[in-house]
Amino acid sequence: MRTHNQSNRLLARLGVCAVAGVLVALGAPALVAGASSGGNGANIVYTVHPIAIPMTTSASPSGFPTPSACVAAFGFACYTPQIFRQAYSIPWTIDGQLAGTGTSVAIIDAFGSPTIQSDLATYDAEFGLPPANLNVYYPEGKPNFNGGVKRSGNALGWAEETSLDVETVHALAPGATINLVVSPTNYGDALNNAVAYAVDNHLGDVLTMSYGSNEGAIAGGGNNIQYLQSNKIFQQAVSQGMSLFASSGDSGATGGLAAANASYPASNPNVTSTGGTDLFLSPSGGYGSETAWNDATNCPFGCSSGPFGATGGAPSALFGTPSYQDGFVPTGSTARWTSDVSFNASVYTATMIYLGFLGSNSGYYFFGGTSEASPSWAAITADLDQAAGHDLGAMNPVLYGLASNPSTYAQDFNDVTVGSNNFPATAPGFPAGTGWDSPTGLGTPIVSGLISSLGVTGTTTGDTLP
Image (cartoon, rainbow, N blue to C red; front, side):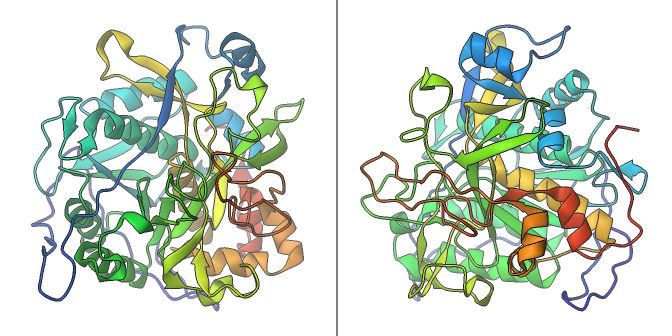
């Protein structure tokens, strides 16, 4: 980032260290302690649930069909970076430079992908994107990817998640440096080490985590050693001016349990929790409308492949209501609630992602899940950092502050008022509604409005690639 300026709303933020290359070593990782007598040392097992449906015909060389043509042929819409930019008013350029220029985004994943560099290059060529500056870090050694199940984690699913995260960030912040930090397992200690490595080496102005664990599944709850360590790392990250994002979940308000259950780390107050929607386009291809993503009760286009999931969003059992949520969460509640914001996440309104590690099955896939929303908001925040000329840091106070003013709220967010996150339909859940709600938070972004509302003067934006 450029030299950071003081803001009357925000703390002055630290600069980002410059890195280059594909595999970079910046010293030993800050390894996380295991069990101790002072708390529960049981492992937290983090999972990802990217929903990937193969596109059975090649997109190249003639390019992707229109979303409506995809619906007719496959039952899924196919959204490209250009479509998301038009729908959510995301500029291609800011002050004459690619959006995200001068910023960095750290992506945390387990296992990684053996083909991420070439997959991203294929994706970029398909959609006319400039080459990316992607660095890959393995603080605890490079995993031996085999596509199988390793230590409670499916490496294949994490590889899909890695592709979704990296390609999404580059699509929406094409000028940003991407620093992918890969842990060898999906256990809490390993992923904590990866996050700590990114924080200690300031590998991102923004950091995204598209994984989670139900709070109810964390052994020992707030006394879990890995949970306590992660909270400490997040506090350090925010103190350094980093913005943190995580997915709110893909199995409705309960996360598959019996009662409403927030997903962690999205429930951490220092983290911005991203929920999911179904985005529908206007006849001109711009923003039309949105509903809370829920395939059980509001499944679009005839739901030809059945229900896949629904956005998370629930009260936390680990955290009380942070001050920025005062006046937003349900009256009488004393809990921190997810989601904070949202983005398109339904596989029926799919983002297109290239996977190159599947042999003869490699190609473009229809993707969905709130793990699309977290890297999308991370990329958008990198764009906002560039426009502001400084890191915005913890985003929840910023976003809720903008939403507290009716005029800036209308300018900055698409208010999603239809749907719920009862999944299955008979399970507990919460409705979408006017203003903040648990399934979709404050809503989806109007990025041009956010740039304006953040008080950026003299900033110019462009809608075409340079």
